[in-house]
Image (tube, rainbow, N blue to C red; front, side):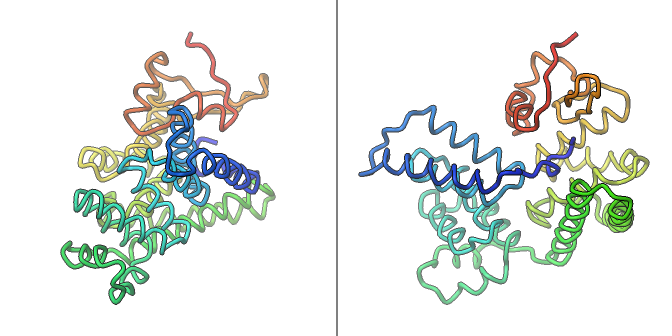
Length: 319
């Protein structure tokens, strides 16, 4: 429950239908290029897009970001996230179109991030575009920016480990049989050996080397290490955070887990437990609850209220 990837939206088809309905309404509202939808509606779209993005529902997030672009109220970051979610959900051509759009609107302000996105998602696909004149700006970007592809194999390894990790957990949640428990423990044991080896050899690998997707996957795999390895290697996470080598939301999750395991109050409200008497999930103790929204915002997390609602966690008043 404490892991952001544990929560797979059970009604994904319903969510996609909702995006379609919202899209129809917004397209009607924006017909003729007029921005007549309210700022509240735009913010609602942004919240839905980013919430799905943070929960790795990339297909849904891509749908919301696409709608956002049609409102003509998008920011530079919105276009980047749209390109990223397009790539992560397999819409590579659309991703290239959005990267091209960013280059036309903002020139090379985000060149490094865009090259990293290309490496992160499907390097072979982007490399095959060199003959297409339509994407000259994208090709020029790849020519002028030094793309470090030396960690591609390691990036693929981490992503594959993450997929196997999540499959084992989903299967166990669906059917907590002794057989599936054994398969989960086996998956954790293999991942522990490989992740421990990566940490010992490279430290916590920056997204600048292995990409955003693998970097975030490594953060989740780190949380599944046994308690001793988790606690002993935490200094590497602190170092990565100081060097901006780990995404802030991922650092928040790991820090909270470290604090809880150290019998301290968590900072960002990402850890919870099930109370059998109240028959509800509750947050483990949070430091300075009245100011938590500011701390979560600074780390790129959605509000505690939204997080609690989405994951059915009861918020208790600070004692």
